[in-house]
Image (cartoon, rainbow, N blue to C red):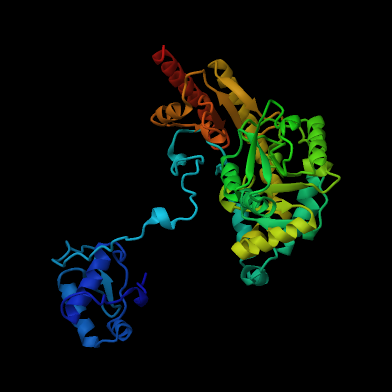
Length: 491
């Protein structure tokens, strides 16, 4: 690999002759790791022209670096970074610039304090990863996804790859969502009522920005998706939390004068509760009574492998007051970051304009690859394969949990890929997670899902989409052992 000549520049405050400054420039690049072993340097002619100096000066500098084994020469191929560059010469270290900005005053809004779920980046190396929302290479159809990507990158799809859609989306993907994906949820929508987003989280952010102001009130489930809490805090709206029960969000607990209600009827996050039909109708009636809007996050509806999914809230809506959020990131793979918003044309128009001002549109080739993956039937095959795998893993998990006397606080009646667990009183799930991580077991503490200064500390979530079936029982046994040790230790 050749090092671009544009990465070379002479610092105006560096000391010494031109030849010495060039040596220092190259040596610092090697010793800092910017120039890697075996990489080719620009020719003496190109570097001299780039720096505006004599070629002989560059040649002499290269010759000196060659003699000191910083560089090596390969016949007529040029100069390369040596495989055995020595210790740095006695160059004075470059002065480190001092940050004189008062960032405590300069930062107008703070986001880093937001509490989100913390998952180890190297989760796959752990033997018992009970974490949620990661792709299992044993389930994902990598071969057909690669073929679809190659097709999307082909000459016939050059326009979809290179076109700036401005505020529009790939027509093939919109057509498939409208004609195949949404009808499965009982939803009818035209192209002007659908917007592709960078995942469900981006869809929720767009929705909050369009609908909420400092004077408006949002109602949200407690516990709920931690990123949603952050999104609503950014909107600076008034926030009302509604405790969920075994059937999800209770409509009668939604406070008066609520403008927007956020709900996860299919699989409540994180309890996995499924809202029954009569409660869905009661929720719509409550929203109609208050003239409120409902944002339905319909994540994991595809994972209804135990029995058919309940009708989407959007499919029961006769007033146009439900805004529907869907995602392909959970069902295909999380790194895809592709979701969609469905709502009345007036709302989608505003969300589309906001998206265009922030990121214009999700990458065209990603949209077209996904469209091929859906249209060619690979997505349906993936869902069927995932359903078989998750059914088997859930059965193993439930047997192990029962065997070791652990308590399931919530699980999806229709399916899903996680269970919500409750440890005995006095057990701190964050401490439990730290102790388990040392034993190659990953769980998700539940504190981040709750609102308020005092939250329950004994809840945790076990995902089973990313752990091999043969390791589930042994992992659950370790969790039970650690809980028992912590319980006896507190006595």
